[in-house]
Amino acid sequence: MKTLREYIKEAESAGVAIGHFNISNIETLHGIYNAVKKLGVPVIIGVSEGEEEFIGKDEVTVLIKEIRERDNYPIFLNADHHYTFSSVKLALDAGYDAVIIDAVKLPLEENIALTKQCVDYAKELGKKEGRDILVEAELGFIGQSSKLLDVIPEGVSEKTMTSPDEAKTFVEQTGIDLLAPSVGNIHGMVKGGNPKLDINRIKEIRLACGLPLVLHGGSGIADEDFINAIKAGISVIHINTEIRVAYKEALEKYLNENPNEIAPYKILKPGVDAISAVVEKRLKLFNGI
Image 1: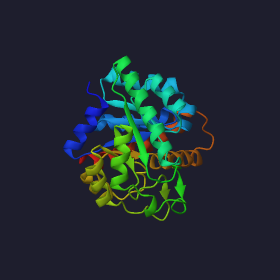
Image 2: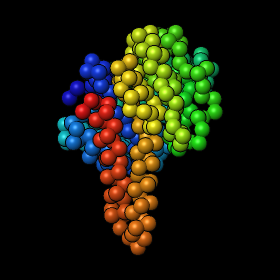
Image 3: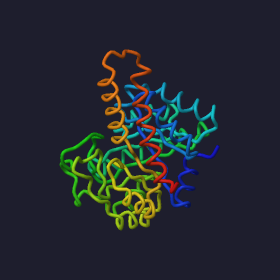
Image 4: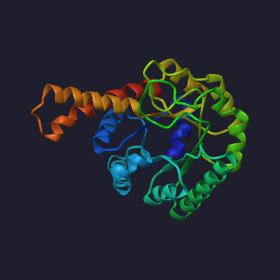
């Protein structure tokens, strides 16, 4: 099977984007994979530090590896938003295919040093174990919570967006494989509507840094912005809040309509189906299907 790096390169060449969806339980994984299989496109499963703690680092690694080998399917595991070298190391040692080191809150020099440390370790481990490990970093601030928001997160503004020059320097000094810039995107969904993406900035950053770009905070972004962002250089898109909302609403509806039901597999199935519907819709858009 081709590597994640190869699938991302193919996506960029084809003018499409790979969907990245987070999980914290097996029901969410089922919902995502049920949709992905119908469309036959590659997918990245993400687990943040909190999600990873709940579902289990080793457990989720085994799950994704088993599905990939059993079905010969391009499903990959990413350590989403890990904040320390130790957490990155543990995830890569467990067998993750990729990792995001998020050090945007640190001064730039410290961010670069920590990111480079993670890149160096990933290369060393990959060479030792014959694995192609991808390291991604975020540059610019887009908030941190994947939840419903009343307003744009404090600290997110045009001033905190990534500049092409910053991106170029950051990539050169860290050696990362993927860059997640701040281009008008935010983590979470604003109830009154998310801001528009700066498409020209995406083009300029992609040209300046020479790497595939990852769009974080995809939930709530308009379809037209997604299409234009992919054309401009986005190769991977993160969706989390949208599937969380769909899951929660489906469970609430079922429990309200069936207050005496106690069988988990019956209670949780509507949530799985709701996740599948969101993922299928997003993947069709990202892949021009």
